[in-house]
Image (cartoon, rainbow, N blue to C red; front, side):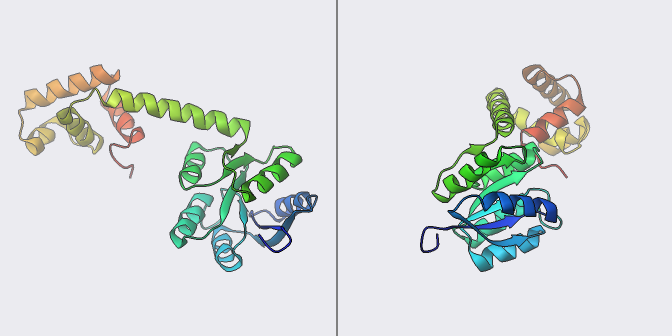
Length: 219
């Protein structure tokens, strides 16, 4: 923070009208000073490096770099900039991506003005976990699904995981047989066991399960 206790905020959103509204909102707090604005992801990154704000209040979907990528690059720079998302987007990819990178919160633009001010002030003091109710519900539901999936995955044997990974990579049973040096009948048995253990019915469902549970990266 600057001398006198001001909270130095960099505001990033690609809509000038939104930036103006948020800037006017933040001006209601005597503790907050907006030291800069950015209209796209690259500008947000550059100004964060240049201005070293206490808080980067950032939209998620912006031209060029999105909010997650800006956060990732700031982490790579090892800058002491606390990130608070303020976005109309509630994509679970955005939510998880930004929180996993250490963001201090994720608010939707429907929040009451006083809640946004309180969050900025809290983040500046090092408080984490500022989540809008809708965002918190989505994140908790995703975490619970992930825990259940991980528990289910532990029921697969090492060989079954290998077979499932190759299925997700698009290989058919004969090719998997050749790749793993096992008989075609053994491959079919593994596939049947995988379906039964995971509650799947088709190869497409198996591919989707593998993608969603990070056995393979989606192209």
